[in-house]
Length: 155
Image (cartoon, rainbow, N blue to C red; front, side, top):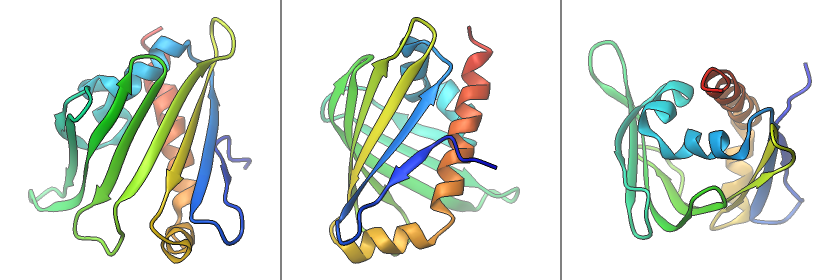
């Protein structure tokens, strides 16, 4: 099965670029990153904090059926321009990965389609390559498929 989310990771570089075209108008695609209720649906995680503004913080966590936190991620917004771009840090709790810097750019393609480009910068080539050894490509593709499915219902 072809992955609709594309990842470009050049050899020897400490960054990667992820692109995905969605059958969603730009405003709805951006809402998927802006509205806590929508984020929770497509990411399958709890939004603890989502302060959509410069210097605002965000925090997500996922718990098992017994209430134990099994995944936690957080960061700070450095730029938040509605329907255009988000610049943020991303850090996983209880994981051997360092903080990363993410540049998300949203662009309209037509009235009903849009594109997300994520440029992710890691501290080192080794850290980026370590991330790529995980089922990262399949995971982000699955998440984007869920985003498309959840947000399509809002049309």
